[in-house]
Length: 245
Image (cartoon, rainbow, N blue to C red; front, side, top):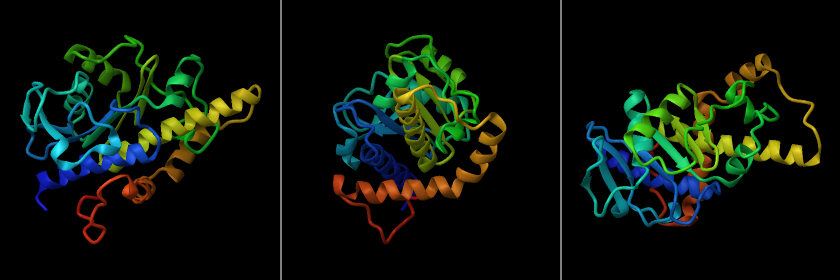
């Protein structure tokens, strides 16, 4: 498998893993994988659900926003991925979804607490939020401002819109999106029952982050999501794990 074939395969698998985790929103939301030849990003073509992504439904979009391979026009929100991956050279993948728990939680304007292991991913000091607009990130300028808002964090909330996540591996980016949504859902459940009084302070949250979410644990979660996604379409060849981180 060539590096480009691996990147294409990972773009398919990232999409299916997000769908398997419940982050699909009909045909909206996407994962982008950096092209190993530096030409841009591999991302699903518009009009397909995350669970429907196959190799022939991918596009290679340049950092100038041009479709270099695949058919059709690029996603309006390609600047999310193009600018984020341009700003952080170590990133291999970025994710944008409209995960319902993340959207609902962001509307409350309350800090994300380390109520659970997932919440500890953000160090017990809330999660970055992009508040410049609740509309589409359809321009390079908005993409750059979103990249600045997430900074070096694993993910950020986009109030009135969704979430964005990133990772130095494809699996890490997918897991960061999944874990942010789970942290939001857990805190929403707790707040529905009453006032949240028990959660990790920043020191404990940072310690838990190192213990609970090292790279090998993120990879284990990613592999689980891949196994779970097998029923959502053409299964990967489990005898060949070259596409894994």
